Amino acid sequence: MKSILLTFDLEEFDLPREQKVHIGEEEMYKTSIQGLKNLLFILNKHNIQATFFTTANFANKYPETLKQLSKNHEIASHGYSHSEPINLSNIKKAKEIKEEIINKKIKGFRAPRWNIKDTNIVDQADFEYDSSSHPIYLPGRYNNLRQTRYPHMKNNLIELPASTIRPNFSLFWLAFKNLPLYYAKNFTKLNFLKSKYTMMIQHPWEFADLRNINIPNHIKKPSGKQLTRKLDCYIRFCKKNNYKFQTCEQFLKKHLIKQYLKPINYAI
Image (cartoon, rainbow, N blue to C red; front, side, top):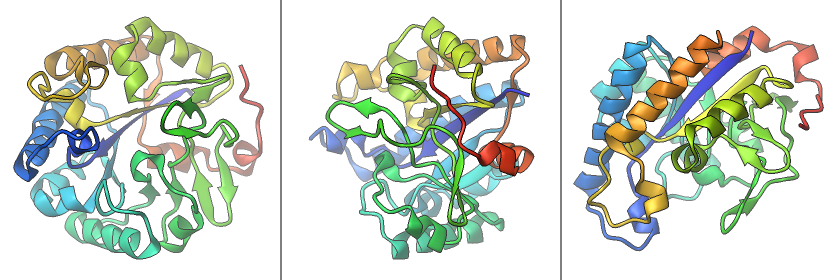
């Protein structure tokens, strides 16, 4: 079985501030909510479950939204805020806040901006899996080419990396947004030659209308309805090829066997 893992970092839209562009608190959250509604329209249309790595800031702002979202999708953790440094105290507190809201155990964690130096604190915070590994080189951000590209155990924690193909290809949000749709289709086909899953990483705020926000074009275009249609086309492609959509939790529950977690050569 070949599994598609649609994962979304559900966070306050603080990216303009990173670009030295002013954005108010209300607009940050309004943008994320608008995008989430557009995204859910497509997921509901295709009856697809996804994994939402959510900040505690967003959860505190919209507890009822998170509660409703948890009925059909996996809620995982994206830390306390999208901007604060990661430490054991704040990721434990963030986990507790979200678990109280949805009344379910949260099993997965992803560090904001993939920025975590010690995944041992994720294990100590009682998570079952970590998806903070993106084994590519992204100029100006990070060089993770030495990171392991396959699922593996680290102490009691399962590491579930983003899907990548050597030398430096990924299906993360900037690639899906800026490259033609055939890139995502071909990446998926190639990735499945050696992997049991293909993970996509996006943000709900991307599906809001970002045209009037003063951020670089490679970040905001396409957005809104245009990006929603692109995701819709990708989902149709996956269904046509009989790929199965799963949450990260569902996938790991199915494939958490010793043989799968042994090192596998994923080079293509």
